[in-house]
Amino acid sequence: MTAFSRPFKIPQSVLVLIHTPAMEVLLIKRADVDDFWQSVTGSKDTLDESFEQTARREVFEETGIDCAPGTPLAGFLQDWQLENVYEIYPRWRHRYAPGVMHNTEHLFGLQVPKSTQVRLSPHEHTAFQWLPYAQAAQACFSPSNAEACLLLPRFFRKPNQP
Image (cartoon, rainbow, N blue to C red; front, side, top):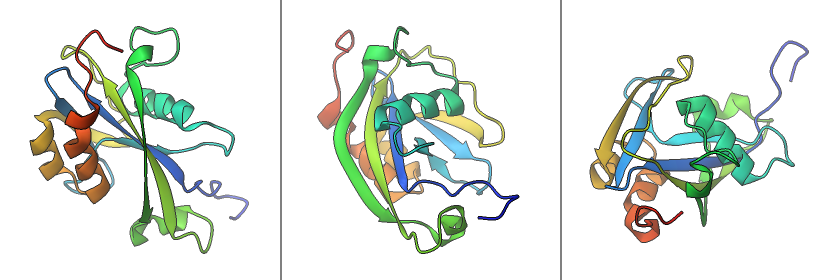
């Protein structure tokens, strides 16, 4: 890291699968890669930030959906108690400390009403779409994201069951 660069990313992140009661999944299109659709993802800001805190922060930063404690959606964030460890794509390794090759990704689901408004962070994402979970899996660039979409029926809670 130089005096003028940003701090290295922490190789611990979250993937939050935002979905409706009809099991439609929100996918967002990255601004920095052509045709790269994904769920909300993001790294911890600090080592002591919990995965849950990271998930709530990233959901708000990337979609404008507020699931912080005390909000109506707070109880609908579900920790799936699953983690993926994967090799960081070469195009993004420069964001991590030298020698860091793998990231640990913790999975969450967030059920939201179909009418939920999405407000993208324009420097990160350019478009969004709601797709049935199996179709969303096919649209995801990342294999771990596609797998998370296909796991949705396993973790799905009926509406009104936070």
